Amino acid sequence: MSVFFEHEIRLNGLDVDGRDQCKASAMLNHLQNAATLAAEDGGFSREVLVERYGAFWMLARSWYRLSRPLRYEDKLTIRTWHRGGRGAIMYRDYDILANGQPVGEAVSGWVLASVDSHKLVRLSAIPELEGTGGGPLCKTMTLAKLRQPGDLREAERRPMRYSDSDLNGHVNNTRYADFACDAVGMEALPQDRYLAELRIGYLAECRPGEVLSIQTSGLGDSRFVRGIDEQGKPRFEAALFFGETLG
Picture (cartoon, rainbow, N blue to C red):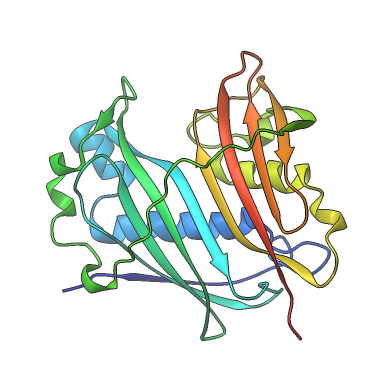
């Protein structure tokens, strides 16, 4: 048996950039919304877990890959399922369709943390997860820590601001994609290139008032971005891979 959830949206003007390509932060936001709605539909939403177990979902890692850039007014169908509640991390898989045609896939890794201590809670402690996984639909990709290159250089120092924050009081996960895209100069990307693949690791929370040193490495179609705080502690890491726009 497999259990999946479908979420449909139409890309609007806030989702795309001046080159009519869906921004990475918008893509991650739609994936995150689909995951939230799927958890609510499955009976293991944030509200349920906080009330019953004093725990909440934290996004640890994200990855997606697209075969073409997504455009303004594309109708997206995001089909998602999880791989089951074992161990410390729950993988959630996604298939991405645009106007009914497959255009990409994604994987995210989630952990459960205690509301009081932020210590990890084992997924096996949540019976609501039983029997709600994707079964044969499940992908095999796992998201390990990114390999850090040795030639990182600072691109900018970026203050974390009120507008970056969300319900939890810290910088929203999608904002790190914006930080990475700004650091590699996406506005100067040639018209025949697009962000084909993005992978992000969320290493530690950031809050408004903190300042990150945004560091970059790589040239051409492969870039690495890292954000570290003023004590030298990594807060996020990202790998960006660019592809050719066909047609």
